[in-house]
Length: 428
Image 1 (cartoon, helix red, strand yellow):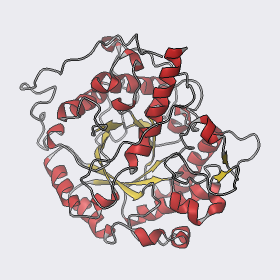
Image 2 (cartoon, helix red, strand yellow; image 1 turned 120 degrees about the horizontal axis):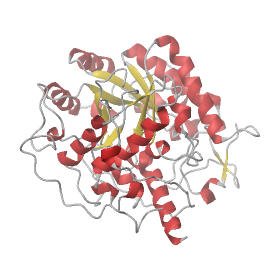
Image 3 (cartoon, rainbow, N blue to C red; image 1 turned 90 degrees about the vertical axis):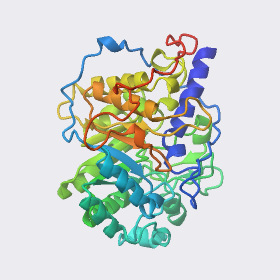
């Protein structure tokens, strides 16, 4: 029981940081080059999840689910980076390496926008007072001139600006009737409320008209808080008998339907564990099949640092980037295979070091994750670093070949020493 409880606590810690910490939380708004502070996590309820060990040599390469656009090599670019001279550094990096796509914040988890919007809700709540790049169209033109595919990232349910300016759309505190806030004092909007999702759909339509070629929705879920904290939350738009999973599933379909006439890919960021959990919805409304049946692309966030000790049989997941990513994506492929026409899988990969947690993520660890995806036939991926700082050595040069020191390079150094792979002492 103690082992199960420990696994549950670590799993919840991973859930909490999967996009809360690494989206914009802790990233100083006046600096692009400071390392985001790591927020503390609170022990929460047990979550029983079985992540099976995978014997790599017996995993066959998947061909059924090869991406329809098998050439996306992307970088996450936060709104501050996009609106600053830092963008030209990133464009130069793309010119010289395999990178051919940027995922750009159109609405991040502050509720602020990339550019002035004509969407009525954005104007009503004052979202145009905190735009990051008034010359966004010109910057998008530059990306197009350099052959860089522009993807608009839009955060849905974690929008404190919308929650505070339209309290009727927000999650409420049971005792006071005021705004409910998570453990780091952030207000959330009510994911049962249709208007919340329609607002994101309208922003997405505007982004496409501006020049974005794909829209990507994040925080398509309910808050990832402990059960006792969620017990204090009231969702005013909740209808009796409707589950969180049903609400997320219906609204994912709503987004796809509203954007269908535009003819652009509609994609969703989801927790990496969603691909491996076979019962329940992680307490946030996310179930793998609900997304891959609707989306054009799903982006599971398979960051090794976010898997708990013993996951997939590994005692030190953060130190096993190849094995963790390959195991997680193997689960994703197996879940999707029985579903005709299921979405492309394009993983978010870890390009950051989590605080003081070892190892530091150097080009070696990043390339190991890319190699894991490509060994399964998945040739599209996006690197995530909240500061939008990327190491050139983790990327192949534009003219082909492997970067110096990569696992496939003749001059590659030996893999760092690894701990025991059995993980039996820390497994769930």
